[in-house]
Length: 142
Ligand SMILES: [Zn+2]
Image (tube, rainbow, N blue to C red; front, side):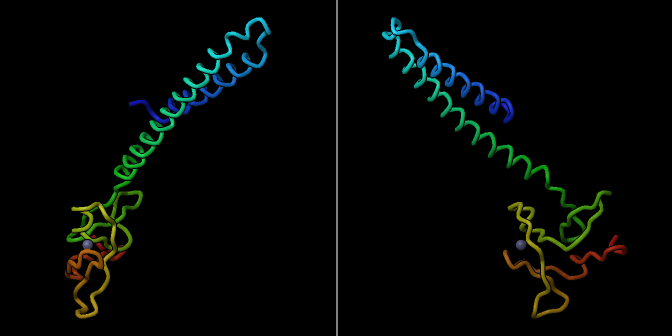
């Protein structure tokens, strides 16, 4: 599939083409006036192409966005939770729900369950985890 820069270049070329045609139309010699409808047709055609390209651009932008989301998935699993990684690919920060991440690719932090100090719970899917299996202590976690 064409990438986003190629589409951007095509769009700006088309804009220039449309402007050129408009310029030619405005500077037509009076003897060439019978070509006017052809120019109008041409402008309409180029305009339609631009519209289609804009649509394509949106689609490509969206799929690239999705791709970026996937590739920025740098979470690592440690015991029963997932974590963001530091520059050495080591887990850091707070635990993300394993269930939410593995099934829906949703990053949702766990929090301590008010009913049990030894249990972490996900507010989204209500899955409960042992604190000892889902708490990563910076420095001594591994
Ligand atoms: Zn969850």
